[in-house]
Image (cartoon, rainbow, N blue to C red; front, top):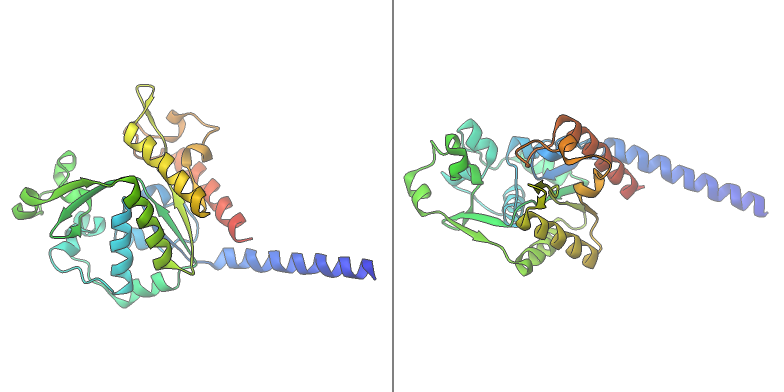
Length: 254
């Protein structure tokens, strides 16, 4: 009898594993984040179709837009979205975007900045006003360029935002991803290092799965995985991080 029971348990476990592997193959993933996430398998391309978000406030705004809960009028439906800025067009809410969002199984949320670029209560994508990338400012109205503000989020705001994001997306699964903790002249960048440590603490506190790319890529040097601008992965870095993230996601659902 015990042998029959053990065989039954083994068959059940293997059946569940097979089901979850099939789920992984066919699941849909939405990426709230940057190009650093683009190598993750099964993503639905919403980030490339609309926006690369950086802060928690941008993510919340993006979710409300995709749910149809927030109308982002012109010209803000250009300046809140990276793709709209790059292609000089307006992006309106539509059913196809909503369906991709609704059909999502797992949301991967990269939080890599605590800065908010704000005009008229909308959270702008930094490219439309960031003087470091002046080529992307050419279509931004003078009213926006002259009157936008930059605010830095405090730890409490970020923690509350993450809980709000989790609530907004429930019961879907979420995974938080930080920036890579680059060093400049041999020292960590304080703002980035502090944000990464904060995200780690918050995720541990609330049991939220968390990927720190510095840990994921710890077998490689910074020069191998990060470009000189300290913001983008090298081709090798994209591949190595994506392999790690895909394995993490697969293990998370099995």
